[in-house]
Length: 437
Image (cartoon, rainbow, N blue to C red; front, top):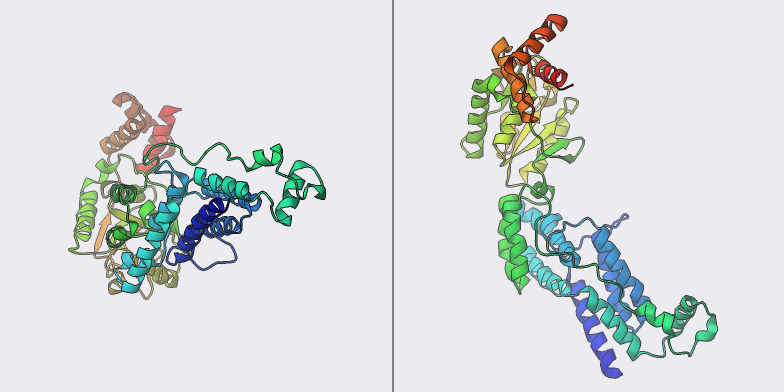
């Protein structure tokens, strides 16, 4: 009997020691606890109740751990929801270590603390669902005379009253302590969704799966964040600024570059030089409404997948842009700051030397403006008829539709005769939609 309790107590002590060792990945508690806070608290309570030989109370904590792991939103990668959660906390969730590494600030005390965290998390990762319920069963078998709180709980579960005190657990109580059907394991290692840093993330996932001593990965982990950034910058390429950076889904321009090949070549050459670390000349693309300015910028982003983008609406103030620039400044990846439909007042007091070295300023505008700031200024002209017809056909092809060229030309001529519209991207989209309807 005592050997059973000793085994349970040793396992509980090992788990409590690992949980208490966490420092870097464990953030200070807030008014609204995160899933990591809940996981941390619940796992600790589970181990503490086992140590006190209270299996009846430990069982709900075990169930709560499973609920947290299922609902936390951690990326499904390894086939094990506990391991998924831990790797998400280490690799994807921002912490002091990942932010310092991303900005290139090496702190040896933080390195040592992260090494300790990784070793502790390795211990916790070895706890599986079957082991949790086996420990509960061991504690229950070794403690046939539960304390009064456990007796009351057992009596309530079986539908009886306080008279259950002193009785052996009945069948209903034994069934309640039995492990549920397992749901922790759902398959093999696989990237089931797409993050922008997956080329390197996949390698890090595999390193954690293969390495027995996670503490040895501390240096490698630092270099991973130092190359790729941290947090949402590992997941998304595109962001929208609205007081704070919010991720945008992957954007797609459509095959319309043929109408402005020279302008796209100039934008591409400047952005490529920026990515190579050669220059970062701010660039402005001008043109009337519907001329395809934003479409061309999206085409550029399609061609340069290593370039992250921050979209800035035209109502953002210069003070907000200055504050915004601090976020990418601490990341190792390159950004294009795209001010669509530029409001010149948004750049009041901002000059090129104020831009972080990893930020390329760009904008679209109806007319040329601030040419002292935008060293590269390009203007889109109106399409001729042949370019317009070709653009409509490319838009149709992008959606898998084929319509004879003469039919497309006839629709273009009819639309222009009826509406006197300009030959631009917006009009081409309208013709495409009419042909598909």
